[in-house]
Image 1: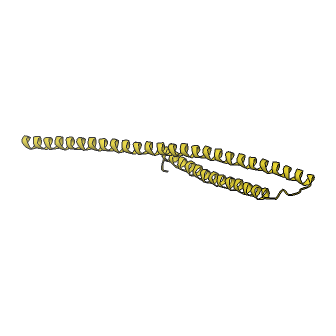
Image 2: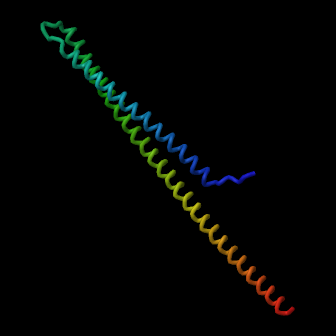
Image 3: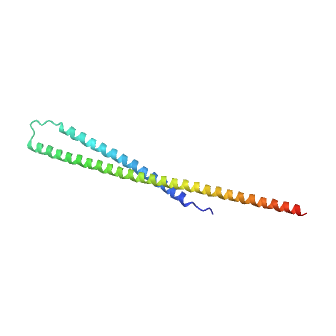
Length: 151
């Protein structure tokens, strides 16, 4: 059974977290756009209601119009709050995505460093083995020469 590289697992998990954070950023951007569109729609509705002519209105109608104006202002404030919340959520998700991306990059650099170190260790080991092999070959030749001289 092959041994799993724990760093590769960490790297894979960090890539997944980065992708999830990136998806959250896209979702929050969509929410910000929807909240801004909702705010613009409410403002347009208020402007359309304001165009009512104020010619000879009854007091009750004036009061109803005033209350609807107050309610419209409340709705606009509510929409502004929704935009602020959506922007704050977008900022938070962007920070989380940035942190996830930095974590992934760190894991990739560490993985690359481990590969480089492992290659260097393997190279040193191969050089040492080659040196030992050459030494053994020389020793074998010297013995062979000594055996020939003795005979």
